[in-house]
Length: 142
Image (cartoon, rainbow, N blue to C red; front, side):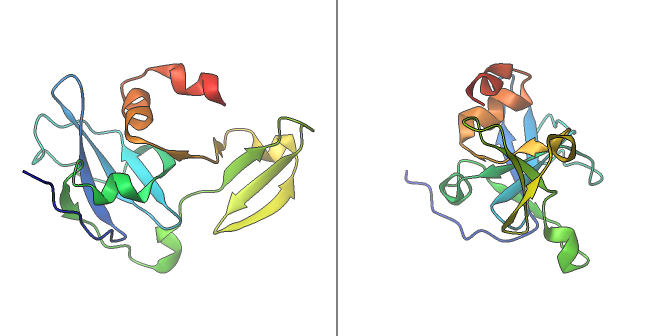
């Protein structure tokens, strides 16, 4: 049976099936962002009780539209500013320069400003699941 493609809405919470039979959950943010909750559920109904996130990454729209990760909740943002993911770092491997990407804009920065920030990238299903499961092979591609 074909999976019906879904419309993406800010604040939707997706259940992410994990290889160990549990579920992770991710909440859709602006700018192709998804926040992955710390909480792991024994079922899709075992939702996170609060907004405690493990990490934020960019995710391809086709991942969220495919139905592979079902929408299990919707958590409205209280104001527009809250819907933006945190700033991300862009590192130019050729010249070593750093930039910060935030709210769709890029600005020059120092390496110190980038310390601790997520590297700007858009992730596919298997890479997000690997990271949730603690597999660091995704770091080797950065």
